[in-house]
Image (cartoon, rainbow, N blue to C red):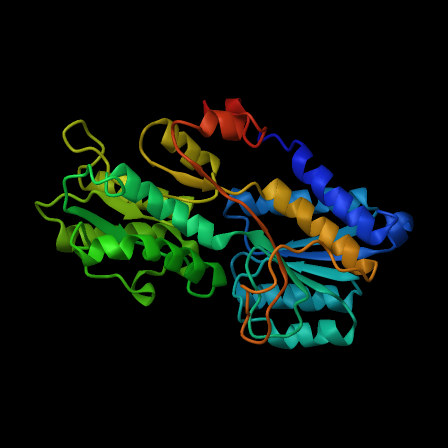
Length: 362
């Protein structure tokens, strides 16, 4: 099982900020009467299971009870779950949305009930009733994926003898993070595409052409199969920009069906995100090339301190008050830093930090 160890650096930093802002770190939660509603999107990804469990554990340290619900990637189910938690009288809500556009009506009810709302990792859109946002630097995620491709192909230092071929994938269109990841990646890749060093043989380069509903690996596999059949007969693909590990594995399945993954026809570069164990195993085996590690233990910890601060009528620690406009307001955010992972550093970073147990990679 994945080790759920304490993140000492994040704990000490945020604890100091939280205690200075809030005084007593457990506050009115000591008697166990304060309840936090936690809405997570799905159990199909191990990261969301871990996020939910970590939130419950961290909030328990403050003496808070939690109601944790998963929505099976269904926006209507998640809205109904949040509405139920409001009716049950939770004191705060933490929501990792399935569809960021789906919450306006139900969060009006949260406002009327004086329930603060923290948007977790995926920004809730089109409503003023979001108090804070906790996430990672989403632009940095896209930059790390694109830079990995550009550097490994030798485009950055000019040693690569192109042109090289690349295909582009993006996440779900209803997830606000998708546009941040893709724009940041394309800011790096577009100049190479414009000057002919990178060629997108499918011609699909706009965000609305490359999104993948619900980040579904099977849909990514289907699209990759279509592209390979239509545009790469007798041609080699050199790189695939994939924004998420589950999609990356789908892309790799399609590539293998088309003969890639042999000594005579090695796999192209394939990026990813979330450092999920199946993808780390794939990186270890020399298949997936890269992933972006986001230490969700830190995210759950930061969010728990946010909840505690808000329940004490204090402003939590914030790192960004300009970037994340949800269509109605700029939502103050705390952003953590992601880390690019490949075969050279997965052991030192992931196993060394206790994020992954080495036995899970056997």
